[in-house]
Length: 472
Ligand SMILES: *[C@@H]1O[C@H](CO)[C@@H](O)[C@H](O)[C@H]1NC(C)=O
Ligand SMILES: *[C@@H]1O[C@H](CO)[C@@H](O)[C@H](O)[C@H]1NC(C)=O
Ligand SMILES: *[C@@H]1O[C@H](CO)[C@@H](O)[C@H](O)[C@H]1NC(C)=O
Ligand SMILES: *[C@@H]1O[C@H](CO)[C@@H](O)[C@H](O)[C@H]1NC(C)=O
Image (cartoon, rainbow, N blue to C red; front, side, top):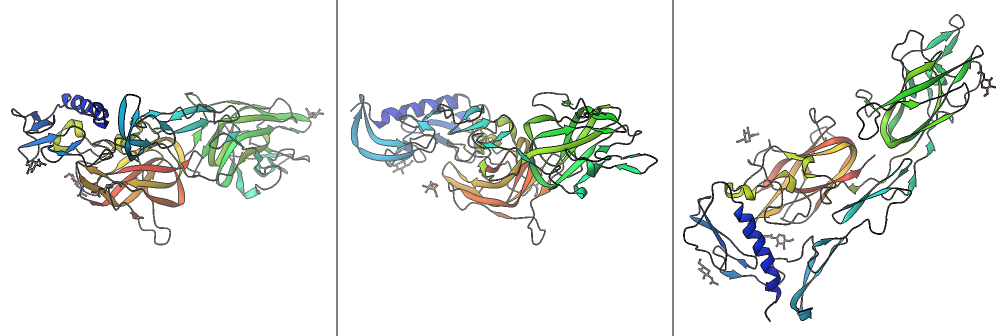
């Protein structure tokens, strides 16, 4: 039996050697190799006179102990589970174990990331992107949902009245006929009838706008606009911009993804017909502002908003699947085991279920000033977090209590608070090196940047994590 399971294991050993050829910093190779079974001996790091980096399949301080079975350490990649079996033949290789793969992975060692887009999970023209064990659909407006299966096309209530007067405001109001006619913002309802039946901004208003407060975050996929006639003459908005806000203070003007200039929407061409514009991608916001750019005679508007409620929102946001890329992760600092660069516990490693010898984030110091940050690149709704510890060369390490902070600009931060007391919320974290601990954010919050601030820990601050939420 020449090529038993050990045959497979040699691959791992070559990899470790390659890693060690990259040793840069304080460590050096031993003059005399004191380690067994092909291990690499390194001296001049930490307190020990030397350390042994064992070839796969061996353990102990000098690598003189053999592994406890073909499944320990686990030869299966990507969270595949290992099962010991009676020796069987697979091709010309004898096996002592089989790997049961997680969905999205295949191969003898679950080493192959299946193309999760292969059976075209995205509906309605959504564009599929393959991730590690998952996929994401980029949906064309007005479709939403994991598989672009939902149509987000409800009329939100300008015409129907679900949006009440107090929710509508404007930069100014035009008073006609000696001040007796008030063309107020509350009249800006699609198909509104009467002699005074729309909003018109004041003639002197150089920066007019009209705003709807939807009272909670909604997803908007379109806007229908309409002009009106005043004293027998058509008035309408020929072109406009759209801005949105979560809080009524900071506004973002709508841009098409990848464009540096504000999007200018084509509006109306007469007093009565309606014009529909889609937001692609949709806007998620509580406040929406229509900003006239070019008006015919006066900026006069009747309108309706198209969109839907936000709902079911607890998808993994992509730490594990790598939808969140390495450049989106940062931290206060990173720890290096024995001062060796190769063993740096980068924030980019803080991915749930990450495997390997250094497979989590760990900061340089263990105190309450340290943090790890995720930049989600756009504002998302955050509903929860999953945390996990790890082992550093056999030592179990984890974060047992943590705080969560969030920000929309990466500069001013809010800590998640207890609803009842208003104190900073202390989230209960992990109790071991591997299990997942899930915490929900109640209520959810909206943010582009999220930070985890470790508060209490076991051995060293060590963290793998996933954020839960959705795009809305
Ligand atoms: C491994 O080496 C240690 C000393 O480095 C020794 O005490 C132990 O007995 C050895 N074990 C085996 C199984 O050879
Ligand atoms: C307004 O629109 C209606 C219907 O399209 C049209 O009959 C009317 O002539 C228009 N009025 C003005 C002032 O343009
Ligand atoms: C954490 O440790 C760093 C480095 O020793 C130090 O600069 C910082 O002030 C410490 N913070 C706290 C809260 O102790
Ligand atoms: C670490 O986690 C693994 C997987 O859950 C478990 O089998 C192992 O016993 C843990 N190690 C320690 C030292 O607790």
